Length: 134
Image (tube, rainbow, N blue to C red):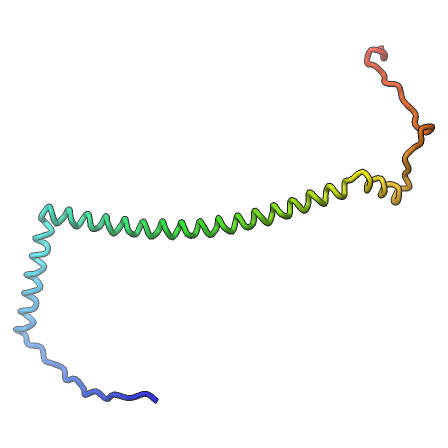
């Protein structure tokens, strides 16, 4: 259970016209001083430098944020590259295993009934020279 505090009601204060007038006059006086000071060259230079400083700090924050995002995407891309490289290595191994001469000869014999011809079955065809056809 929590404690409950009961506060007394605050009575509204009536505004005194003279106090309000004094406050407005003071505000106008202060604003004239501020705007008068802004006309001075040194204050304008300081204000300009302050604006440049704020803009520069915002630029640093933005560039640091972009740097972090780019580094994260670079890390993801490197991981993906490594995965593709491993898959490529597996495919090369599979290709070399499937394309071996022994395997091709075995499949040719099993599927198509092919055999290696003997010496007596080999017929040599003479090479025709382009000049002999004239």
